[in-house]
Image 1: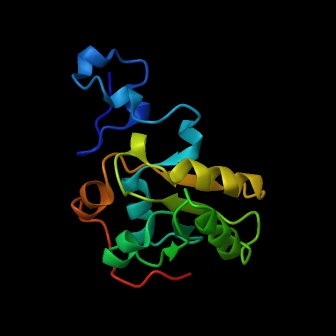
Image 2: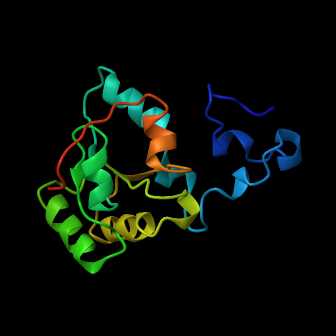
Length: 162
């Protein structure tokens, strides 16, 4: 039996469940090849950590476009630059150089549907290549507005800058 978590249907919940039984055949293909469940974090899980009283908050890096970050972003996230551009990856390296390799890092973009995002995989791969082992990609299925803002998760406005 598939597990339904509030309004969010998780990929892990439906693995092994025939898509026809849950009536959402495109859902199983949401994560591109090369990603594992261990690489991913769902928005609800991060929002709970941000609003809860947990210690050891992750560093949150926005690896999308500056215009999106300036509009609204996850509170206290750091603009690292678009992961699909060489200058974005260079800025990402500069930002993370201040943190130990054991630091938990969550990256996110939200510019477009997950399957089309040009930024996430490159940024994730770069962080892993730099030796960061506790990296998670925030799986924003549709876009930041729908999957974060409209869900009522915390946001702030601000300028793009590390």
